[in-house]
Amino acid sequence: MTEIAVGQDLPEQVKHPTTRQLVQYAGAQGDFYEIHYDQDYARSVGLPGVILHGLLKAAFLGQLVTDWLGDRGRLISFEVSYRGVDMPDHPYRCRGRVSKVDGDDVELEVWGEDDAGKRTTVGTAKVRMGVD
Amino acid sequence: MSTATSVIDRLRARIGIDGEPVTATVEAGHVRRFVEAIGDPNPRWRKEAPPTFLVAVAPVATHLAEAEEYGKGWLNGGNRFEYMVPVMIGDEITARGHIADVYEKEGGSGNLLFIIFETDYTNQRGDLVARVRGTMIRR
Image (cartoon, rainbow over the protein chains, first blue to last red):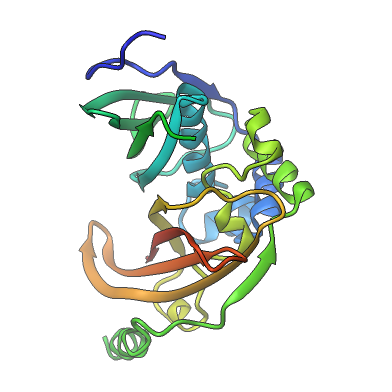
C-alpha cells in the first residue's frame, strides 16, 4: 500500500438504488416515512417522487471510506450534509479524497454526486491509522 | 405565526432533556439485513456493526408529533457520527437522546424549522460507544 498523501482519490463507487432498495432500507433501519416508498404521498409534500433516505446515502459514503480503509485503521468520526434530493433509478456516484494528513490522523473529504454531477451529499471522515 | 411560535416554544422547552432510553441487542440477523439493504458486502460486518448501523438500533430523530404542526414535511439535513468504541454483534446498546437545539430559518420557498437531535449510545459495560447528531428540518 502506498503512502497516504493529501490529494489522493479514494476508489469511487457507483450505486444503483431502486425503490425496492428503499423499501429494504426502510425496513432495516425502521424508518417508515412515506416519502421513501409512496409516490403519491411524496408528491403531496412537494417532492418530485420518492427519494433516497439521507442515511442510505450516508451508508454509501461510509462504505466508500471503510472499503478504502480496510484493516489499516479505524473510523473516528463521520459527518454528512444532505444538499439535495436523489431519486431511485438514477446512479449515485460516491467519491472522496484525502484532505489532511497529520501523523496517523487522516481526514477525508467525501461526497455523493447525482447523474448530473451535482454534489447532493457532502461530508468529511476522520480516520486513525494503525489501530484496530 | 402564532402556531409556529408555540410549536417552537414547546420544542425549545425540551432542549437537553433526555427521552426514555431505548435498549436493544445488536443482532447478527439485523446487521445482515442492514448491510444487504445498503449493499455493503464487507465480511467485517459479520462481527462488527457498520458505521451508520446505530441509527437502526434506536431512532436518533424520532419524528416528533408536535413538530409536525409546523410545515408539511420532514427533510434530513445531515448526520454526524463520533465513534469511541467499536460496536460488535451481541452488544447490548442503550440509546439516550435529546433535542440539542431548535431554530427557524428563512428558506428559498418559506420558513424552515431546524431540530437538532443528539443521541449517546452506551454498551453493556457502560462505555460510551458513539454519539450521533441529526439535523431534521420541517418545511
